Image (cartoon, rainbow, N blue to C red; front, side, top):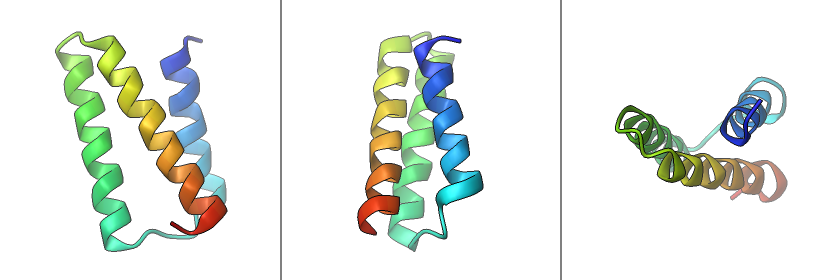
Length: 68
């Protein structure tokens, strides 16, 4: 499993097991990050997709740890 797949698995785990809910602003931010990651994957820009995935994971960890 490569780094992008590992991060994606962590994101899925957070959504399935740790996240209680998102505010509308949080949901929109996560949606935009995911859309950007998907676009970069389609364009073959793997480094940019990886950056978006890492940023999404960071945001989700902040939400579950700090509520922000």
